[in-house]
Image (tube, rainbow, N blue to C red; front, side):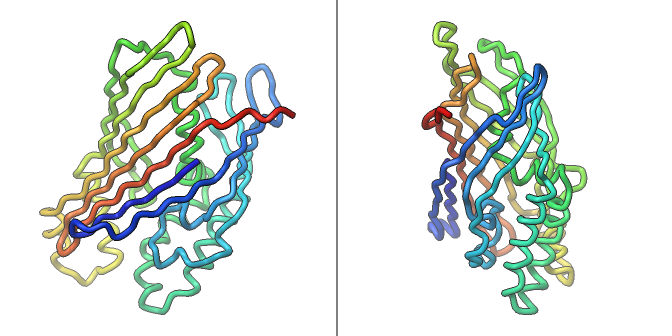
Length: 275
């Protein structure tokens, strides 16, 4: 797996970074209707959570993580069984990072981190925000597609900064398909509702600086867009992802800030390890 981040501020690249790590899937148990699976990897927790750069200085945040989860016979559902263990690991890493901040920094970052810590204290939060790779891996399982048809639908994306989540429009379409090889390549495009994005931004800025009387005005005139593009290459019988790419681009133009950020997750099948 590979994760990369590119930040552009005022038309200049201010960050271009990436990490590469191996992840291992192992079926621990199976029945006629379910699987219990171990997903194990080693990474920097603070990097994985996309926290601000100021907080990514704790070397103890580099940990080996094992996610134990169950799924049904089609692979369409993901339920993390050891979520409480993961919750303790992730929240401790965040709290340890906060301990190095001065009082002014703590005031600023606490308002940003509190919703994240609250989300990570619940099973749903762990499944939504700490297992994005798993959700990508299982995305097409249990669904029957017609490769000749394009799908368009509305959905709500969970966010730690919005109780209602963020409304989004999604498009799904196929590029390649082979019945002979049981293989296909398809793409999804997701566009977050700009009004919902601005509401989320307003909420965060109010928490950071609730003394600024003009926050509503400059957020109203601002640009804050979140768009996802995903590519999937699968051998669908028996259901093996050969390559997955997730690209999320965030563009912000508000007050004195003009910045864009592109986060990329790549998952590539390497080999099957025989036991």
